Length: 96
Image 1 (cartoon, rainbow, N blue to C red):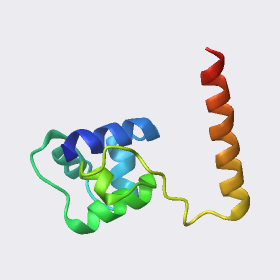
Image 2 (image 1 turned 180 degrees about the vertical axis):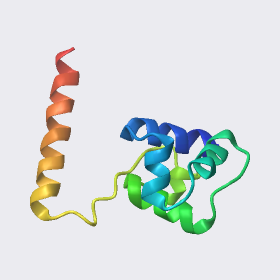
Image 3 (image 1 turned 60 degrees about the vertical axis):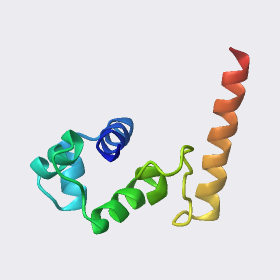
Image 4 (image 1 turned 90 degrees about the vertical axis):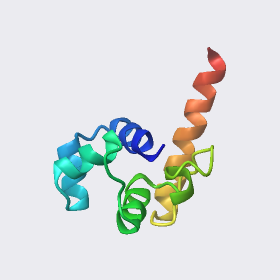
């Protein structure tokens, strides 16, 4: 459900409800209502959430099961650093 996805993404990013609300220019109570399933974000905010968390709207809506990170807004150097980190994490996982 989108309510669980929003909460999980927010917590994974280390944002409080207030911090997420500020980034989206909404109230904290709006974020709380989304996470509690009392309301659903409008299409505009679904797109903004996807951009903020660098994911597809389909993943946010639960239509895709795998998280895909969208790197379109990053420079070539930043993308290389991200891939370097992923490689490092994969290697560490294989050591366990």
